[in-house]
Amino acid sequence: MNVLSRVAGAAVWVVDVGVGVEINPAGVGSTTGAAGSGAVFRVRKVRPGTADMTRGPAMSREEAERALDVGWSVAMEMIDSGIRLLALGEMGIGNTTAAAAVAAALTGWPEGDLVGLGTGIDPVRRQKKLQAVRRALVVNRPDSSDAVDVLSKVGGLEMAGLAGAALAGAARRVPVLMDGFIASAAVLAAVHIDPRALPYMFASHRSVEPGHGRILRWLGREPLFDLDLRLGEGTGAVLAMPMMEAAARILDEMATFEEAGVSDAED
Amino acid sequence: MNVLSRVAGAAVWVVDVGVGVEINPAGVGSTTGAAGSGAVFRVRKVRPGTADMTRGPAMSREEAERALDVGWSVAMEMIDSGIRLLALGEMGIGNTTAAAAVAAALTGWPEGDLVGLGTGIDPVRRQKKLQAVRRALVVNRPDSSDAVDVLSKVGGLEMAGLAGAALAGAARRVPVLMDGFIASAAVLAAVHIDPRALPYMFASHRSVEPGHGRILRWLGREPLFDLDLRLGEGTGAVLAMPMMEAAARILDEMATFEEAGVSDAED
Image (cartoon, rainbow over all chains, first blue to last red; front, side):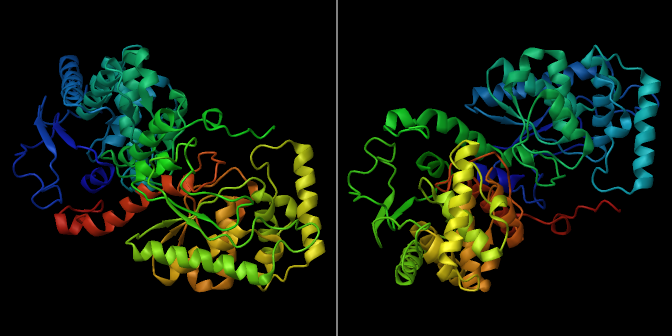
């Protein structure tokens, strides 16, 4: 993600909304290639990891609201700093499970259509993952008409944070690029919270997770490319940034055929 | 093309290999948006337009060889100036017809699979275009084992020039990004001239021209995106430049899981 952001000329903002361990931002990146990336860190941990959603809610409603607020306020800070295009990304192992549960709860789609192979599990583990999603929905009975209830019961802190960031982008008329399945599930929750956010949401790629294409179709978005990515972290979104810039600059800077005095195909 | 090249940080080199009228490079762009683009112009006209290929060869073999040499030598000049990624593009009305004839002559594919709607003609004109391709092949009998013969009889000066540029890129180990149908037909001719060029050829997009996907499959190349482009000029190729840079920099700059001490999915 750091490498791809350098190519795109994008700033990386890393927000700890709820990592299970303590993170010292000064030490992050010493061995991961982030050193010297110039990434901005914000430690805004709501709680150290979520609870097991197959036994009860992942977090309280108040915690979900605080995570939404973290995303909202950090995105506002980014926009205030001059950023004019947001790309949503996340890191986490196991969060395609929660994303599938969120999408199923909000839409009523069959869980089997939304559960994929994540980081590369085998079919037996996929079956366990599917059972976990079904069990979480049965145990928690999230209210499909209340996206905050869904996020708190079967979601994750990163998804709530991303939903808040998406709403902030829309509120400030800043376009928001979705990344893969998890970021798109967060946007699905955001537009359930406020449908006026939808026009500001843009697709980047379509990942190999089967639920991703379904969410994009529900949102009415055609992905710009399909490179079999399954990394997350916002990598697909940042790869799409030059295309977004190209589209905007074509509108701003290009002479039309009429302005250039070129006849059209019919002439 | 000028706008998209600015986004990609690419230099535009415009080469007149055979435009039908005289071009004064100093005056080009005054109304077309090219002014101030910093484009480099090279006037290396081989002849003012090709002949009607439905009545005889489009050009002589010697002219095709000169056009190949124009592309080769301008590409060498570009590489000598420090350019490390070439994107092929062209301008012209009617050149999807010649590109279809070149692809059909080299591969033996049915002309009907290669003739599309170009800049947006209607089905009746497409039928006339198909007849023109068939007639050109019958009248000229290009030798499928001799790509220079094919280019001279049913090709165009721009395709011969682009084929020469592609061969120069390969000779200098500089990757070459194909654009749409016409640039890809030129690359098809180039790899028939020298198959060692193939590993240096990269796909960018797949255009709406039906023959384009066929050529890319023949070359063994998967397009990076498919945005229903039909503009030419190298626009799709230059849109792919940030992705090419991203791929190269991931290889160069990214820490591996092993280097970063991250355990893999199996652990």
